[in-house]
Each structure stands twice: as structure tokens, then as C-alpha cells.
Length: 86
Image 1 (cartoon, rainbow, N blue to C red):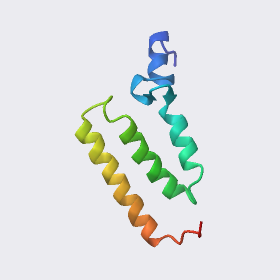
Image 2: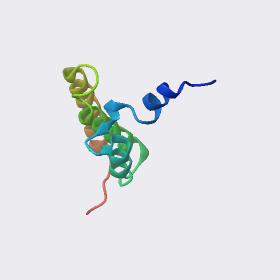
Image 3: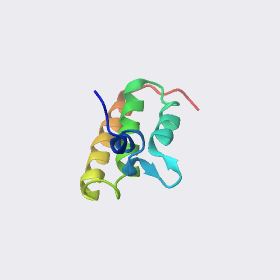
């Protein structure tokens, strides 16, 4: 499948995934790398994704609601998860 050059920017660096001078994916990868398991990291990553891009894509209320949905799910998992002492 060939892609036009103009569409590469939408794949490699879409505007709604850039937060200031940093790519949102870099922030998310750094943050979730410390998660104790994949489920917790996945939920955390989604929360960050929706919060960091909430003003740049779709409706901010929709993005905030999606972030809250994932945050609630993360909290449920944390409630059942035995976290190590820090």
C-alpha cells in the first residue's frame, strides 16, 4: 500500500499528538515504563493520551470523559493490585 507524502505527517507526527516541543508518545512511553504491569501501564497511557491532546482533537469534553473512564478503570485495577512499597 502506497502512501502519499502528505499523509505521512498524519501517521508519523499528527498535530494532535505533539505537546509543545515533545511528542505525546514519548511522554507516555516514559511514564508507563515504570508501571508494574501491562494492564496498569495501558490504562495510564490512555489517561495521558486523552488529557495531553484534549484541546487539539475532537471535543475537549469527550477527551476528558474518555480520560476519566480510563482513570476509573486504572483505580479499580490499583484497588485489587498489591503494589510494592516505595
